[in-house]
Length: 347
Image 1 (spheres, rainbow, N blue to C red):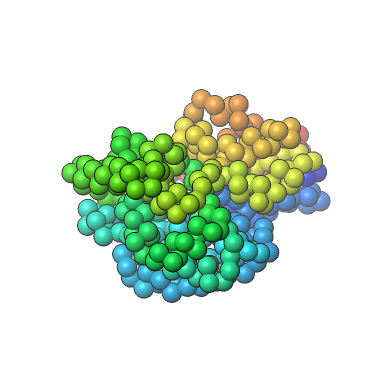
Image 2: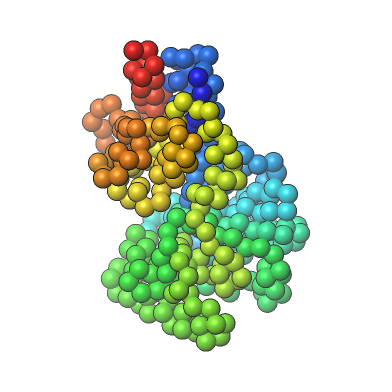
């Protein structure tokens, strides 16, 4: 029998690779002769670079730069062939700070420029930037301002791709300030001021470049980094399809009897193009049923169409901090998968 495991990271708890291995161990406890294929997976957010690096041949590069509060850091990105893969969360990730009205004013995307610059110096002909998990809300202007005219010209000669799981425009009611500003620490007055600046920038860029950031889905991703990438000549696309194709997920699923996927929180937002739904659709195309696991699971219309079943990994009432302990999470995943396999295949 063949099983495929492609579980997204449980943010702050366990990585995709750790979760996949725990699920694999659960399967093999019941069916020791089963073939279990694990695919580290992500949709453009935290952990995407680790997932891609597991499936691609290449090497890591470390660069001295600054984080979103301009503190010195060393950030790594991955090169495969002539393609540079950069994860914005590794440089300007929201996990690097405690969001507040002060940090939302200070947070900048300028640190990414050093990685862009290094990729150009190494002769990369394509740059892929993952946009999830950002803690900055500067509209990507920090990145733009940190690049010289010569560097911008060089970037215009290569392919730039931004991976995102949102389609928000740059400004307005669905723009980066209004939708994402509060979760990054902005109060109502700050949100209003940030959105005004964003709208003015949209108008300025429309006049200067002819590019209308309001008409391009995803320009509001990562606090406006999506818009910055577009202004540098880049294109935006959904993260999951790109990653699934790059890692050969559809081919790996072929011949499987069952697929396991999941994420930290399975709820109605998961239906809006989140990774488990993407995996389910890929598996459905191959005629393979899918079971979804979550650290927390909320009922949502549409799950029954996407998944054979959904399960929460929790076994007792715990505080959030306890529930997110890595060892507990992995043990729960292994135990749950073991019980699912025993129920389905030993009856």
